[in-house]
Structures are given as structure tokens and as C-alpha cells.
Amino acid sequence: MATIIDGKASADKILENIKQKVSELEKSRDRKPGLSVILVGEDSASSVYVKNKEKKANYVGFNSSVYKLPETTTKDELLALIEKLNKDDAVDGILLQLPLPKHLNPSDFLDKIDPKKDVDGFHPVNSGRLLNNEKPYAVPCTPKGIIRLLEEYNIQIEGKNAVVIGRSNIVGKPVSMLLLNKNATVTVAHSKTKNLSEITKKADILISATGHAGMVTADMVKKGAAVIDVGIIRGNDGKLRGDADFDTVKDIAGAITPVPGGVGPMTIAMLITNTLELYMLR
Ligand code: GUN
Image (cartoon, rainbow, N blue to C red; front, top):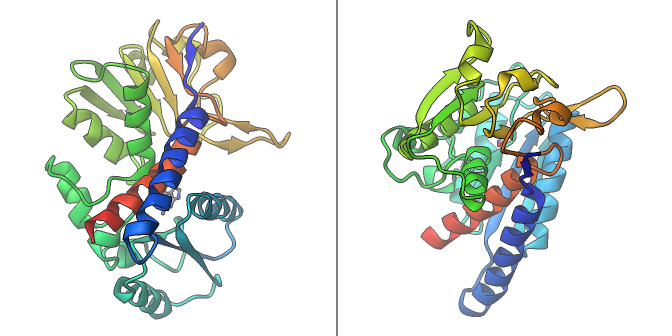
């Protein structure tokens, strides 16, 4: 049976550490780290994520604000808010929660966030730096959390075969770059990939970010592989499930992240980490 990678415990430790740091910083600096989150529209999953982000930001002692804008927000209104936050000296990190309503195109906004306040690392300056293996101001939160978990559990990356299922700008592409920069041999699979299981069976590290519950089955996994499950899907029974069929995959894998309690909590811990790092830059 695989080692269960306890993302919740790792995330709690990171948050505890930052809470401590913030209380010390308060003695030497005139302000706390500031995180501003923008949520446009009524997407129910996004509302839950944003609530959790706000809760953790408050927990560690950040000065956090959430801007909830209506579904009908125009491009100019959203740009005006981003511009205001760019100029606000109390704000270190700006997060525009995705997805946006259909009439708004993320690329019209992500490159308007000051790269030094781009807590998600989605600005082209930051994604370009990641691509070039130069230090970005911030690295996307979920990918950064995945690497932290692999390192914490002493799972070797260098020289290993890593297979990433999913090519999103939020997870698949940036985690592939991080793994490549750490000298893994990286394959990116996606919805048009042929013979997926032939590819995944070669993975020492298998990262799945598809959002299809249970699609990674035991027969797709190499014995002893580390399986990192980024999927988070709520079933009709109200329970959360991941991309991996956990109950069968855990008997083949060497290590596996559960859902919930794996990658999810680390994403928020990395958001908090990134905010503190951006604060320290200023
Ligand atoms: N939507 C799903 N994941 C993320 C994330 O990491 N950042 C933002 N901004 N939106 C998301």
C-alpha cells in the first residue's frame, strides 16, 4: 500500500510558520502583507475556493480583501479595479479568480496585473521567466505546491520520468516546466493523446489534472510510482473525488495524494507563501 501524502498536514505546517513570521514582521514593519482577491460572477466552486483563501489569509494575519463583482461586470470596470490595486501600496498580491464569466477573456486582464503583485504567477513576465528557468516573482500555486510535496516526501525528480495529464495554463503547463527545470524527463498528455495508458505506465511521477473523476485506474500506473492527483470533483453523492481511482491505485502506487487533503490545501498554502514572498520584495 502506498504512502499517503498528507497535503493537509504539510499545508498546516507552512501556514503555522507564516503566521509566526507575520507576527514577528509586525514588530519591525509598519504594515502587514496584503492580499486582494477578485471574484467575478457566481461560479459556486470558485466562491468556495475564494472563501477558503480569505480564511487562511486572515488566519496568518494578512490584511486581506475580497472584491466580489457581479456577473455583468464590464471589461473596463475590471481593468479599473486591477489598476487601483496595482497602485495601492497596502496590496502585495492580486489574485483574479478563474474562470471568468464568458464575456471576459482572462488574457485581457492577467497581463495588466503588476508582475510584482502577480501572486498566481500568471503574468507573461512570470510565465516567461518560468519557461526560461529564470526566477519568476511568483510561481503558480498548485504547481509550486506539488513540487513542495514531492520534495517533502523525498520523491526524486531529477532523471525520473514524469507524466502530466492536462495542459492547462494553471496546472499542466507550469508544473511541466517546474519538473523540466528540475531535470525530470517530462511528457505532457492531454485529451487528444493516443494510448494514454502506455504513456502513464512509464511514469515514475504521474500528475493528473483533468477533472474527470476516477479516470486514472490502477492498470495505468507503474508499480511504486508517485501519483499526484489535482482533480477535485464533487459527485452526485456530495463527496469529493479526484482523477485517480484512489482505492485501487493506492495498492499499486508508491505514494499518492488523497482527495480531499492532498494537493488542494497546498495550493492555498502556496498562495499565502507567494503573498509573503511578494511582500518581502517591496
Ligand atoms: N481557478 C482554479 N485554480 C486557480 C488558481 O490557482 N488561481 C486562480 N486565479 N484561479 C483559479
